[in-house]
Length: 501
Ligand SMILES: [Ca+2]
Ligand SMILES: [Ca+2]
Ligand SMILES: [Ca+2]
Ligand SMILES: [Ca+2]
Image 1 (cartoon, protein in one colour):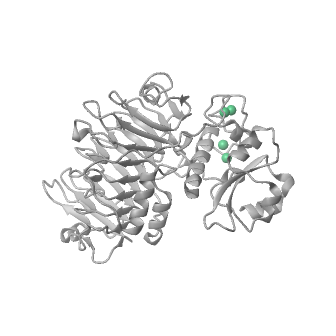
Image 2: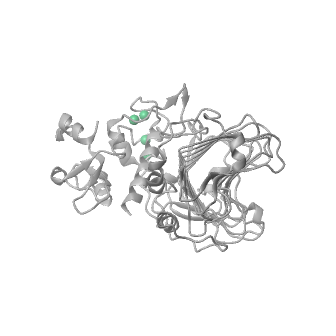
C-alpha cells in the first residue's frame, strides 16, 4: 500500500503520532524522507519532529507530490519476510551467501559511548566481549586505534554503524608498528557489519597488514554498506578457509599504489567456499576488481557491481587454488582516464593452475572497445550459471544508478561523495599517498532511556515499550525482532540523509 492509498483508507484520524514519508517538494528534484508528527510542542516527539525538519499536517495535504518509498515501510508493516527456507535472515534485504549470518541476535546491547581506542564504552570492548552482542553507537566520528586494533575473534557480533549519529563511524589506526588492518574477522563466525568506513591516513609499518576489511578462516559473515580506501594491501581480503560470505553495497576505492587492489576474494584456500560480491563499487584500483581464486566445488557470484577505472585487470579468475567456479552477471565495467581501451572485463590466469575454472558471464555492460574476456576464457565458459545465483540480478542497465545511488557507508563522507562523482564523470586518479581524513559531524544520539539500543521515540511510534529493554521481542509479530526493525529504520534514515546531501 502506498501512502496515498493508506491516507484514503485511514484518513487523518488513523495517523500514528509520528510517521516517515518520502516527500518531493516543488523546488527539489530529490525526494526527502521526512518524519511528520502530530503537533505537540512539549513532547519528545514534537522536539524530534523539529530536529528532523518535521512539518504540520495541514502543510502535508498541500504538498504536490507525496511518494511512498522506502521510509514508510515501518508504517505499513509489509516488509520482507524474516525467514527464507526456515532460516532467519541477517537483516531485511540481506542477500548473498552470507545472508543468514546471525550476528549478535539475542545477545547483549553494548553501547559505544566513546571514540577512544579502549576502555569502558569503546568499540574495542564490544569487539572483544565473549558473548553474543550488538555494538550500537552513541557517538559519531573517528575511532583511531592507537594500540594494536582488536580482532573480531569471538562469534555472534553485529557492529551496527547505522546507529551512529552525525556523520557515522570511521576506523583508522595511528601508523607505525601497531598500524594494522582496522577490521579483521578471524577464526570465527556469524558477524554482521554495516555502515562502517575504514580509511588509513597514516602508514603502518607492514604493508601486507594494511587492508581495510579482512575475513580469515570464518563463516556466515556479511559486510554491507561499508567503505574502504587508502589501503596498501587489499580494500577487502578473504584468507584461508572461509564460507558463506557476503560483501554487498560497499565502496572500495583508491587503494594505494603500487598495491592498489579492490578485493582479493580468497587466498590460500583449500576447501570449497560460497562467496557473494554484490552491488559494490570498486573505483580507481589498478587490479583485483575483484580477484577470485577458489577450489573446485566453490560457488562464487560477482553480480551487479560497478567496476571502474582499472588499469591492469578488472575481474581476475585464477586457478592456483584448484579452479574457480564463478558467475559474473549484470556488472558494469567502466573505463576511467587511465584504463586501457581494449582491456578485458574478465581475465583468466593459468599460472600454477590446479584445475580449470568454470565461468558463467551474462548481461555485463562494457565500455567502448573493451573485450568481454581474454581469449582463454572461451574454453571454460559455461552456458548456464555454474551454481545457483542467490537472487535475481538487476539488469545491468540499472546498475550504475543503483550502485552510485546506494553503495557505501551512509551518510557518505566527502571522500565517497567525490569518488561517486568521479565515477560518473569518468575522472579521478590512482594514488600512492593517503589523503586527509574527511570531517565527520559528531551528531547527537537519540534518547534511549531503557538502554535497549532503540531510540525511545521510535519505540513509542512503533508500538514498542520504551520503558523496558525489549530488543529481542517482536511487538508486531512479523518475525523480525524489535531491534532488527529499528536497525532497518536507522539504515533507511542514513540512506535518506545521504539522498538529502
Ligand atoms: Ca514490522
Ligand atoms: Ca530504547
Ligand atoms: Ca524498549
Ligand atoms: Ca517485528
